Length: 114
Image (cartoon, rainbow, N blue to C red; front, side):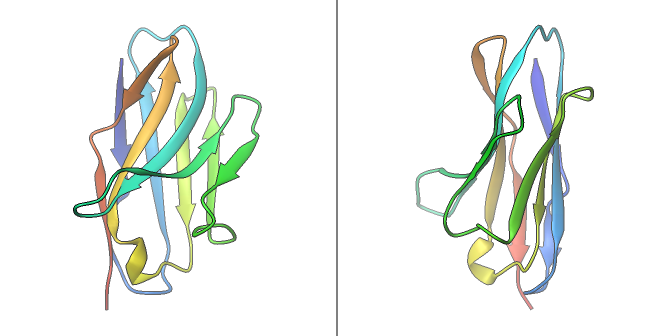
């Protein structure tokens, strides 16, 4: 089982990016899926999480700007990021509970700068 992320990059303040994370391999069940981010020298922190049924939870710092969604048929989770700020610059990691085991993506860099 692996998680492959895409969609990171450089964007100007106020811009938007959409991250995707696709799970592949021998998958029997996927429970919660989420996104975390890590700033240099800091611990990884939760950005957003979504359950199988579609319930969501967000970090206060991204509420109203970021939207997490998932396509269960494609085993994929998305993070739509709008109104990006320089302080959103970080490495973003996908996380998923697959077959009752926790998996992480390789991380994708998001840089918000003019």
